[in-house]
Length: 392
Image: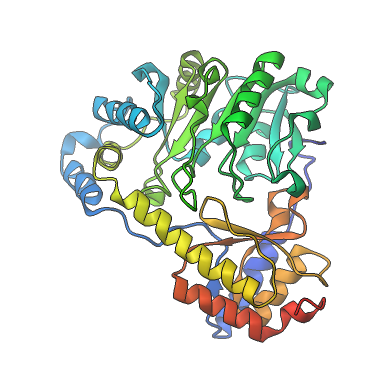
């Protein structure tokens, strides 16, 4: 395992390199296909936008939003019961201004300087940066491709587990797209109880699961409420990334403690945003399946197309991403991406951005239609970048 503290982590210039290259290509007039950022291009439902617009016309809604509305709390309760068969009291629910903001702050009321927080490698960057802002030490537990990117609790040494205060887990996983099953969550709960560790589960993609499978909630597993909380987001499920609306749910005492902390740094979620969120949760849910099938069609066009030209890319299991091992003949993910940008005009994210275990991989975001994905495949094929290591 790797251990890091705030201030001594390795600073990376990966994003600067790629941004500089992207700007250079655009200035040259290149038609850049940007698959680096997971921003949905699907539109929200009209009734959600109307709910926001109607609420925005009420002058009372421009006051400090000190509390979540009953409408929103009830919508979250009903949605969790319908979607996951999980019953929540209103005291177990709180809104946050996007899961990124929530996860950035959630460790503050639970750890102090020098405490140990466990986070995945590879993993979404806020999982490490958030806890490090508290002064905590980070223990990065490895996710291995040969274990399907699923945490093996045997890979966390006993003395490390005994020191840890929090473990951050996220499935469906960004960037690896891995899915966890019921048995994994049962083992997670046993691990947390044995070592008295708080679980923070990021569940942003449970409704973006491919091939007919269904995403889980950590809280649907017996014993989960005793050990942790879950973040859930409307961003990708309902195409509401700009609204910054998510919620933390779960263990009542943990939620109360987190709520008390956030009350010192934030005045809550704008009431029209709360109205839109409630409308999304209460309204017609056809958008969820449309999104899932839309992303799956894009995945099929990209992954199937890349395999057809000699790049053995596995199908994404979930999320709105594809996690691909770089072709042979390249020394690093960054080297390959720079070559792909220069010769094919296609942008992705280097796996190194997500941790040491991401080296040798890149992440594509499924943010353009299937026809455009076919253009990505065509450009990569014609560029010759797959031939460097004798891939084709």
